Length: 116
Image 1 (tube, rainbow, N blue to C red):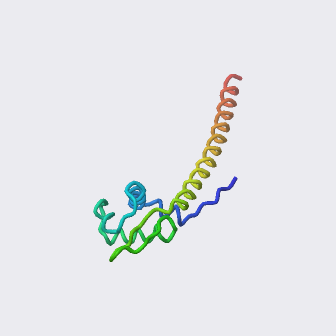
Image 2: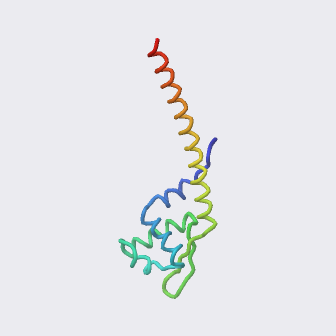
Image 3: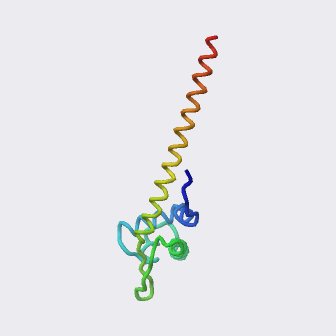
């Protein structure tokens, strides 16, 4: 069972500042680089760079608002990311169950052979 993973998407989500930005945009609605930088431990310039990464992978979209842009989470793309994470989690759960069964079989054989 192979799960297709969008590496660029997960690279973007992998950064804790970008995850915080997504959380802020989800909880507070659209935001600007300035408004986000006021709530994050990074400069406005750093926020702008992080927003560009999120925009490139489609996790956010933006619209002009005066001299700035308003950013919002693209919920369809976020749902795709969640679906990928769920699929990867299910794959690893199955692998771990197989590893556990193998380890239990080895342990049973080891215990059985000690009694001989």
